[in-house]
Length: 420
Ligand code: AMP
Image 1: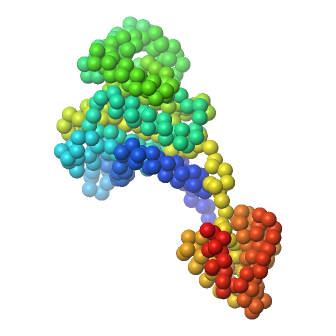
Image 2 (image 1 turned 60 degrees about the vertical axis):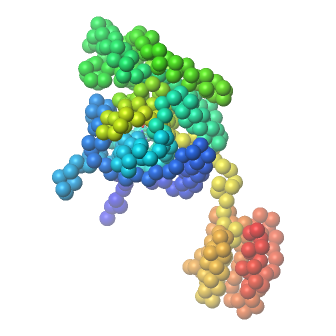
Image 3 (image 1 turned 180 degrees about the vertical axis):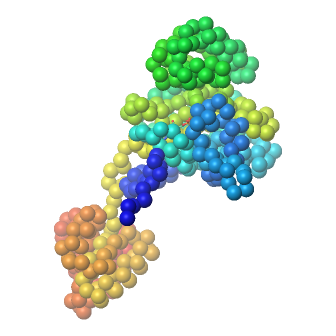
């Protein structure tokens, strides 16, 4: 019979990769807590309507990438393609706006998008998502970016580029949008790719981040949003830059960065690296001052970002020895009585928090010692019939290749002492 494989674009994560993920998640939790964030856990499944309204009908995600199905009660449900809409849904459903002026939340978990799988792009991927709801001042934007860059430096990731832009607001963006439509219509629209041609009518700003070369050339001559920003948006953007400069955070202003999602206003940012090939963005974020209202809530501004965990892990340097340390002790047992003894000792020590490995199948000594080596165990204890009778065994230090005799009934004590 053939084995059943995973669904295309869905992947398994094994050690030591999982150890790295845990390290990243623990560092994130530590840094975010210091900056005043609490963790929220939200469902993987939501009503489809949430993403239609929250992400926008004319985005790639909603148009073609969602895993949507009708469940047995005829309700349309969707596996979440991103976390922001869900966080806001939870925020509103639990009436948080009435209880606190600022809500700072983060969540870590899988997202689902039916994109074309390739290196660095999966159909189930994981994001670290951070949101601040309430304030709209530029200090908040700067604080979020500062925290993010601090987090990345804690992971010792280097050679990153922070790109920022301002996408304007409901006051100034419509005029810019009109100018872009006029520019595209008056140029050579027939030279745009089919998607961009359609976008002129639905979401013209998306032409800015089209990957097709010709579209890129055409749009590079288009008007720039910075020329259209209203004074409050301009001030906001200038203040953000001043705050980043105060902390000597280097950044580039990328006027072509419009981000894929409809809901962004004012600050938008991405962090990119040259080490990931085509999928060079490891995170994206921005301000969304009308999303809460669009989802049926009060007019509360927000800002957030989402980091791709797979891409972050690919850039995070291995932690060397401490990340892949083996067990403290490997017990090689030969014979039934030795296996019984090993079973007891091994699990007693584990319950004291000491990592111990054992082989209950009583294979040859040679193969057991090979396994102790492979696991990078610090010590090995060999127990056979004679050792049980004598109540003594040899404890071998695998690093120094020295050994000492230990009393079996004092082993727990001896090993606990070594572990300290
Ligand atoms: P977005 O929610 O589209 O702004 O994406 C934020 C980050 O999530 C990106 O910068 C990527 O690191 C990651 N990401 C988005 N889509 C995928 C995917 N299909 N596979 C892996 N990572 C992804």
